[in-house]
Amino acid sequence: MLVLQGAPLLGAVFAMGHFTHQSAALLLLLAAGNAFLVAHVFMLNDWSGVHQDLRDPTRSAGVFLNRGIRRNEIGALLLILLLLSLMAFNQLGRTTLVIGLMIAVASALYSVPHVYMKGIPLANSLLHVVSGLLHFLLGYSVFKNPDMNGLQIGLFFATIFSAGHLTQEVRDCDADFRNGIQTNAVKFGKKQSFIASFVLFTLADALLIALAMKGTVPQLLALLVAAIYPVHLYWMLQALHEGLTFEAVRRLQARYRVLYAGIGIGMVVFVILA
Image (tube, rainbow, N blue to C red; front, side):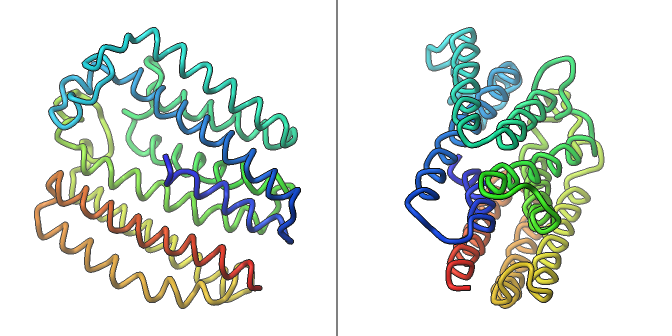
């Protein structure tokens, strides 16, 4: 959940200009609303996929049914979380509220039975691109109406989000196969999906460098990305060499999240110093 706070808060940083007491209050309200929304998204996914998770040995111990929590209780809680998030976004403006609603709809399309785009190859990745862009614009819209600069920077986050989704599909491929879920990794194979995920990471990094070179984002970000990319490549090849086991991919995820957290911190610092 902490990882998913990054995109909207960075969107707000790129849009807000000078930091003031008022902007600090808006950032806190955004963080609260986004925390409620992300919790809703996670709980909806858990509520919808509870029976598959019970059959997954890597997840079954943490399933809420095995911890004495009933499914209808989770259903009520996820609706309350959605309501709280929309109440917060409503205080931030109509555009922010609409974007929050669109993210909630995208989450439902991904998780809810009978629609369940999680099990539709390619479409699930496209949905993550859209969701990643909306998540960045959620924060951007607090201080500025979405514009071309916002869309271009948001596309970086959208591509990263989709790449991370593909990596997670590779990690969970064996469990998804047993549960009959047609993810990209199940449909096209672990290796092919893993390579596709790294291609998306590469495209995202190239986009950020291009945006830095033309001044849309601070130019120092280009140097930061260029320094980090070889490390990510090495870790990717290491996971590939280890056979893309669950543990190897999970370790890779933890590592590249640190790298991209570093880019996020760099964004905040460079924007403030600009």
